[in-house]
Structures are given as C-alpha cells and as structure tokens.
Image (cartoon, rainbow, N blue to C red; front, side, top):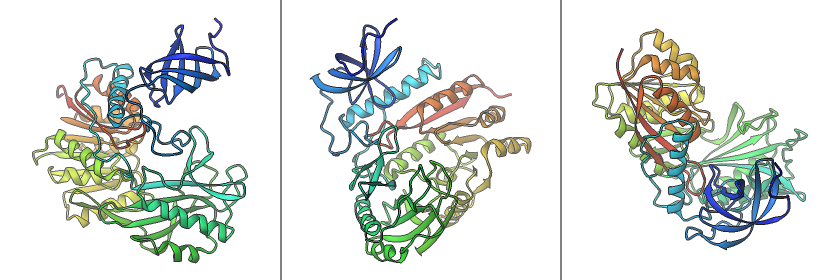
Length: 456
C-alpha cells in the first residue's frame, strides 16, 4: 500500500494524541503522523520530513486550531534543545500528559487494566530546579560553544542560561567561555578523539549553597588550570573544583578517575533534615524539592512500624536507605559504584544512623547471594536505572517473597515491564503515584507499592 503522504509536502493534520516523547500524533486516512510540538486537539499544517511505510515525521508549518493548553516557551532555544520538549504546554497540561503516559505504559506494556494511577504530584516552581548540569563543549566557527545536545544528535545548542538549571550555572558558563578562548584550550572532537575539554559538570546544594565544578578532559592535565580556578573561586558558594579524566571513545560523560584541584571533592546538601555528601560520580536525584516529596511518599507507602528489615537495591549514596532507616528496624543497601558506597557510609555516619549497612556489588550478583544466606527482608525497595531491574534481581525478589515492594522508577516503560513480571509471580500492585521531578520535559518519576499476595 502506497503512503498517503509524500516527503516535503504539506498536509493538514488533526492531532488525536501525544507520544511518549511529547510529539503530537495525527492521522491521515489511518496513516500515523508524528508532529513535534503539536498538542492533542490541535489542527496543524505539517511539512513531512521523513516518510516510512506505516508512519511519517513532520514539523509544524502553521497552527490552524490552537489548543487552550498552548503557551509560548520562555526559553529561546526550547525548540532546538533536546531537553524541554513540553515547554509549549501549560504546567497543568504537562502533569496530565505524564499521568496518562504512566497509565498507558502500565496498561499496554504491563497488561494491567485495573490499576488506578494517581494524579501526578507537581512542583510549586517548575523552573530553575536542577541541582546538576552536564554541559557538552563544542566548537562553532572557531569559538567554544557550551550548551546541550539537540534532540537525537550530538550537535551542541548554545545555551547561556538554561531555565531548568540553578542560576549559578550561567556565571560558570561565562567563566569557562572566557577561559577556553583566552587560553586557546582545545575542545574534544568525538570523530578524531583529539582535544582536551569534553564536558563541564556542575552540582549545587540548594540548601547549603555549595557549588562544585567538574571539568571532564581527554587527558591527564588541563592546561592553565590555575587561571580557571582563580576565576571560578570568585563565584559565591564555590566549594570544590575537580578534574575528571575520560580518555575513552565513548558517549559516557564521566571517566572513573577524578582528582581535586581546589577545595573539596564533594558538596553537602540536605533532603529534609538528612544531610548528604555528593561527589562527582555519585547518583543523586536532580530535583531536591521533589526528591523529598518522592522519598517521603515511598516511606509513607511502606508503612513501616519499626520492626521491618528493609533491603534497598540500587541504593546509590544511601538516600532512600537513610530515609527508610528512620522508621525501620534495619536497612541493607546494595550498590555497584564504589564511590557511591563510600558516600553512603559517610552519609549514614554524618546523620548518626546506625541501623543501616551497605554492600558493594552488582545487584544481580549480590541479591542471589543474600537469598542463599537466608536473608529475608520484609520490605524491598528498588530504584533502578532507566533499563529497569535485572532479570536475576526480579527472580530473586520473587523468591524472597517480601511483604511489600516499593518500586521507584524514572522510566514508565521498563517499570511496566517489571510490574508485569512481579504480578505474574505473586504480587499485586497497590498504589501508583507519579511525581514530577523533571518539569517541562517528558521524564517522570513513579513510586509504586506492591504487596505479596500469599506466603509460601
């Protein structure tokens, strides 16, 4: 069957839904058209950019009927940067979109039709909320460019003042541009694997005000680093400046070796009353205000009485472990990153939490060992990376048969896949609560409570 549309031609399309990446979905004679920036209910004129056998991608040429939920993006590069794909929607509409996205994944991928997904918990202030920024560095017309990757590419879109990041980043970017230009510092080229500076990574303590800058380099030494330090330490709150060495031909941002060139190699910050040390390689949620909401919801759903043994899988620097330890008998955290485990131990000691321990290793290796040692947790907490839980981890959790599982996810699709497995192996989904950690983007965090249906 021949496609009803042709490349570079324009068509009027009614938008009937939205995809997981925030693109509008339209139909032309049952032929699907994906339109970036379109909103459900709109009628738009679309130029077809790519035409496949069963679908096409297009861009908006004109909006014929505009949605009441459409707003003008406050960021001038929102349409080109790969981050804020929902800035053209009201915040209320963004929250509704995210709730529906979670529900659709659970029904379509998880095959769970009768699960009630609660409305997404939103933010009071959906801008300048991120405590971590990762800026790729590139060259354009002979000058350094610092910003973010365009969607589906490694072309850097220059952005001097990202509206999602802490405002101190604008000053850091300004200092780096001057430093790179004045000292003729070479910029890393992915194709040739030559050049020094690859990325600039920043972390900011929203409560403490501490700031750390990490320069990722393709080498052992950053030329004229003392001049960079001299300028960066003038920025209010600057606490540490570190160099991360990444000489690999990879898209992974950070290498394994980090050295401190000024100050300390970590920042301190709080979630609620709990204090955390955060180093460059450690995972820490990027939205401190909503992280507190997320973790408090996780503790609330666990309904700990003080008698439970908790297993926290993918524990990172011990954030959830320490939250849970305040209400549990004991907590054991498992994490593969050595630096994160060291931070977790320090964080527990810093907060005088004595009923939590940490074990280093891959979850898929450690959890079966714990099961063979007859470790029997009452509550299991999992907060895996986007790819979800390893199959061996899920199998072992099912064999352990804890009373409750608290599953925290940053990817609804893999969450739904794992929920399908768990519900087929003796657990019931009790509560699904999305929490918006990433306003103006399509990303969403979800906390789910599962309960064991029966004991063996």
